[in-house]
Amino acid sequence: MGVFSQPVWAGTNLTSAKVYAFDSQVQLEKVKQKPRLAKVGDVMVPMDILKTGSSAWAKLLFNEGTLFRVHSNAKFFFIPNTRSFQLKHGLVLSMIQPGQGITTVITPTAKIVAFGTALTVRHDSTQNSTIVSALTEKTGRPIFVSNDDGAGQIRLKAGEQVEIKENVVGPVQTFSLPAFYQACPISSVLAPDQEQLVAQEPTDVQTPLLVIREETAEAVARQSASPAASTTELAELCAPVPELPEEEKQRPNGGPRIGIGGCIPFLTCGTGRPNPVRVPGQRP
Image (spheres, rainbow, N blue to C red):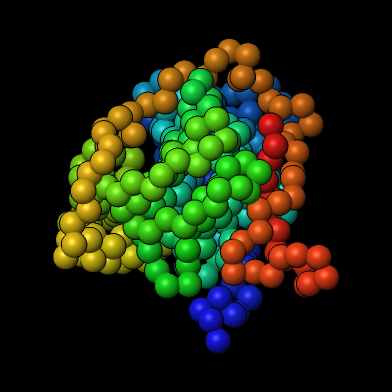
């Protein structure tokens, strides 16, 4: 029996997210309401849009324990009755508890399918470019990346990243995880020897963080035995994405279109065979 023989895709749908901390100017645009400044304790529901201004960030806790950190100049929301996030612009750190099933992060040029646990996604709509960086790697919980149509799919291991530009999946590059944590303040809570940062978080956030930190620590320890060469400017990856163009700041008419496509490699695909589990995505 293979490691994927069990129905690991079952999971808890995303129904709400609490804004439990933020800095600087963060806007929340509730469905059918005008944008307003966010407040600590605000609850997002599917299709509410979170926007962060320059030099701003926000921390989100979802109903099933998933944590998101949203960097500056971002536009972010999630889709009803799924475990699917839409990142139109900006940088996010996704921290997913093990056992939640398939989670997708969809940008205008890429589709990321993750079984956990920690990764960053950076989409710059001014360049039509998405960069995905994997921070953890566990047997049975892969991270797959493809273009928006599900083509060019590759699997990322911890300490690997890939850029999808103009819908073309580039080569996989390796990077140093310790160097990444030093260069990316958004992810510092996952770095080794940063337990004091966890202690500063609310109790309901500390629980999933401790689980996720076990896996990030394993990834760092595994890489230290065989160091990965740094092949990109990590500081640039974690720098704020340029401000979203004015014409792109409006809510998409009717919300995102949910497309079908992108068979996950270990599932059966093809005519006359059992229907594969499909991953919801968006075609811009």
